[in-house]
Length: 291
Image 1 (tube, rainbow, N blue to C red):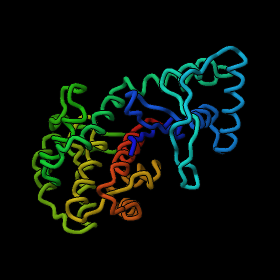
Image 2 (image 1 turned 90 degrees about the vertical axis):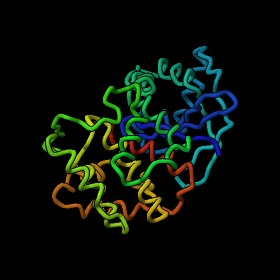
Image 3 (image 1 turned 30 degrees about the horizontal axis):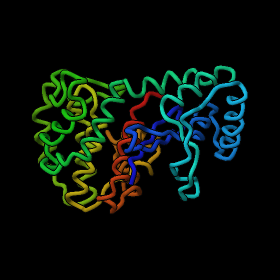
């Protein structure tokens, strides 16, 4: 199975497939049109792409890297061959898009790889495939620190280090720095034998927010490791809407019933399915994108 990746521009999926032979990503042309045009309908986006491809050719702009060798999953669940563009070709299309509509998309596309999140996301893919997680002890603070250190090593000087300052997000104040170490010991000791116990442990770790940045991305991997160890299950994060998830996590500081409900509805036993985990990373990072 080829590696697959999903990026999000204005909440529209931009899917990609990894080409092992040429060591590069190929992006769905129809997804790019949907993202730029903010088009919900795949058929309309596909028609626009075919028109745009002809227009660019008429204007003398050669899209030399268009290929039809990769299949993308259609809305009906079936995988079909579709036009795909490499990164260079994506930028050519964006720069020559009618009425400069793709300017913001182009800025995002270039930035999404070079940003801290872009680099960290690549590290997350590597972590999943490296086998290093097999040596970690799920449910422990040390395990969470190891995940954070791997994701953000070389990107933040505090990678893997428990914060010493008090932080807040919006109206949510996380555990005071002076109480954090004792609070983390309490969370670590929480039971994790049932689904509800595991989710409560996750909710409390979120309330702790042990790092200055990167808590959500690290803790969702940590949660899946606990589920995998204790229940032979994991979360299919693609089944949880971004807004629903964020609202549920905010509410969990006083009422965790909604996050219990969301996670229960997204559980899968496909714990050895690499695509489930890769897709989980994509959605996890998507949750952190600014609205």
